[in-house]
Length: 620
Image 1 (cartoon, helix red, strand yellow):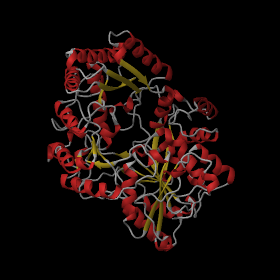
Image 2 (spheres, helix red, strand yellow):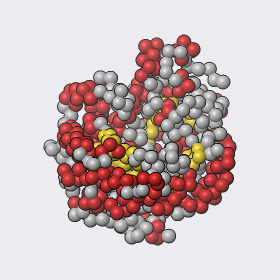
Image 3 (cartoon, helix red, strand yellow):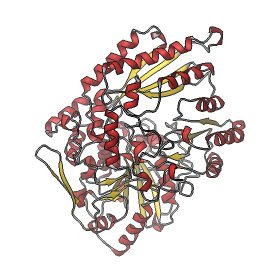
Image 4 (tube, helix red, strand yellow):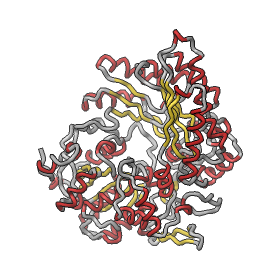
């Protein structure tokens, strides 16, 4: 056992001390005097959320396989420990060694969600690391960001030394090798950053200069060093089967969000939904070999003792050997009491058949994501679902024994009308009606339909990156329209309605498409006490409103205006594989209400097939 950075008197004052003590099963410990590089991996949210993130588990395993690297972890301390650390002047520490973060060579922060950005500043602040990258000295850690939000790193550019853009299995070894040799030669911080900029996927924001037009849009973004490329190519693994995957994932002491073995069966998606950033960023679709998955399942269950396996992907139904994999897992692990979960299934007979085998129907609900209530709007977003398919899927589920249905929609989508909003309630009513068409003696209790709406946020590298976003008031009006329409339905007692927080969504939209001028806003909000903004009990919209005012940041500039075809976006320096030309073509097709076929039906010429050595299904 390692000596804790916190004594017992502090641990007794805080909620869930197990968040901070380390020593979990499969945690890695090394002699720090025998490694060349110390890397602290950070998830800027509470332990329970961070421990559920597969990406960190993969990198933690990958880094620690190297004899010259020791990778440890840190998560955002909850508000109770945050207060104590500040009051007692205790530096934030890593879970494994309990050493201060400021003593490490690297602090790597995964950026999964824009509403965790103030937590990034919390991590730096509590670690004693200068918040602004330009103020850091030779003895401060190199702060590197990664994850999906790093595809537009500009709102955080002033706080990071480096960003890793893409999938971590590709270029991290080259970065760590470079640092080890640079450290051995006694080179300085600036010199290392310039050398790192030449590694594929590495973006060094201090090596670029951005200029602006009088209207606030970007005029240019130019490299300041010959080592810094004009375009940073997003990194993608081309062979998922033979890349690193954790056989001994970390096992938490306390209940976490995803407390199970996670088998990532594929990356990417063939569907082409126009609102979905992940569906564009992770192209082309790449599958893991089924032999590798079967072997990994045995090893991970043995090393963790977990009682559930989750098959992870953006669209599990599209994995070509799903029936064989599910059958194998059931035959080998069901008698051991191991459950199998399959998120991200589509509404079809095959998916329902698979789910009926792995779920206790009487205890579980089935989830559909039509995203839009009307067929017109589903065509706009290229969802690829007709009402006939939705109603048939719901009917098959009801006849199969399910009586609980969750429906997910978005409000505020491009071209949305009041009729589209009301169509959400009408579709829920038709699904409820379909349940009551089943003879009473064959029904499984009372029908329960839960309708949930999130509010649409235009994201970078999607066809909707040009789209305007609604105001908070417009979002709430749309939600109230749906709510009233549901109340007017015949089967309203069977339908429950929830909607997301509008002010949080608007702020997410600001940072999703923001530029590096937003660092002033973010810093001011943090100074005013904004923290854990993704948590309802912590979010304080009044403080954010004050920060906007005090920094003279124009909220509407970043949200409600339509972007022009030729506008330079803050993220245009990233080559993500999918071309801007393709995305704009899809934006035009959306406004024409024209559907694009999925990748297995027809190649849409998105550009991802030519990216690196990646190939699409049609070219296999």
